[in-house]
Amino acid sequence: MRQLVIQLARFGDLVQTKRLLLSLLAEPETEVHLCLDRSLAGLAAILYPKVILHPVTAHGTALAKLSAEEQAQALLTANVPAFRRLARLDFQRVYNLNFSPLNFRVASLFDPSIVRGHVWHNGQESVGQWARLAMRWSSMRRIGLNIADFWAWHHPTPVSPREVNPPVQGRGGGLGVVLAGRESRRSLPPKELAGLVTSLLETNPTLGNGPITLLGSTFEAKAAHQLLRELPTKHAGKAKNLCGATDWPGLIEAVAELDLLLTPDTGTMHLAAALGTPVLATFLSSAWCSETGPYGQGHRIFQAITDCLPCLESQPCELGVICLRAFSDARLMRYLATSAPKHLPEGLLDLESAFDSLGVVYVSTAGEDTSNGLRSDFREFLARHLGAGYSWEHPDALKFAERLYSERDWMTPDLESSHNRAFLSTMKYLL
Image 1 (tube, rainbow, N blue to C red):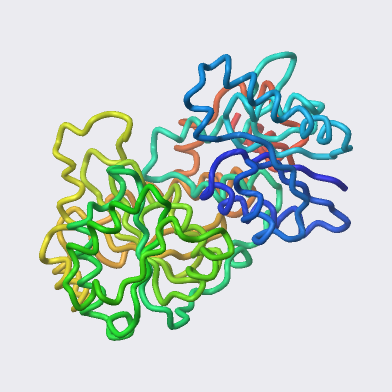
Image 2 (image 1 turned 90 degrees about the horizontal axis):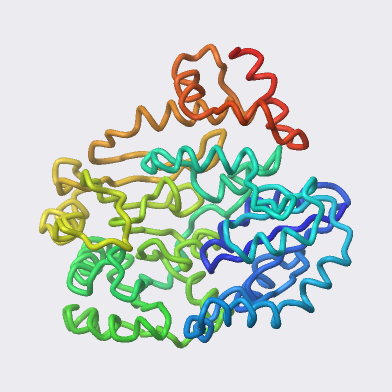
């Protein structure tokens, strides 16, 4: 059996496709192919050595300078040979994971009946039932499903979440710090980041005695220099600045050797989780860990929880980025030293990653997670929808069924998907 995954998003998304790819590779006598942006082909070859790669041009800084018509022409010219190769292959199943014009054009190469996710049908863009359901719950981002699990559940029986990434283990290489975002609100500014780095080094003897490795692209070089100026001299002198200085093998080697990676929501965060490197992630602004947190058991997340979150980073913040205040609160250092919940600054959750029947979850160890009850009910609903546990007799599962199902789901279901066939039997029960 020959199967194709179309993943044309960026670094982090490629890593988060791991559970789906492992699920396909686990099938007997299956040949798994991956269509991806050519800039990520080197990374994919290391992460997924058993997968056959089909690189195309999906992104590029040069394209941004062109008009929409010129971009389309450039992409077409660059990708026609790859499209022809894909069209000649006899795929039995295609998983198209992204809602983008290029993804739909790639999907148009294949019979719509074999495509899952985002489908090109009768000259129009069409979205599969599972993806439609996700669009409906997207307004409830605090309780959403991790995207790695969402993509994996396009497969009727994904591998256990425990099989995706190795257990976390520090390897003696000290603290890694990811500089990211090009002034993005979801990244800590140098001053706040320096405070957190200093707190970690001075409250953890293992980290305090080791080196510091700064990671990021060439765009983060300025932020790296600003961070070094903010750090106490005794810590700044131990820092090695690798921003813009690593290729894919070099980045993997650097991240794999760390005791801990301190990072916002970045591709490097997902890479660390894939390697089993412990992660301490900071989530604020538009980033919410339920959606894109590090995958695996035992990672740690500081999640800002102000009422306005998660926000749209494309819109200006009229509240002075209040979600950042907890990270500059002096009580955070005290909390890191004592682990006493009473010392955790207001507006912050300390979460640890774990697993349930659906995939990865994030459990609060300090701070009040006011969304926990609703999130549990939502996951019960999804587990029943996917045949992964629970019963429709549970009133909270029925509550979400009434909210998220629509007439279109049972009038025009995706009959080829096994968990959608289960959905039809569910609708009989509900009706």
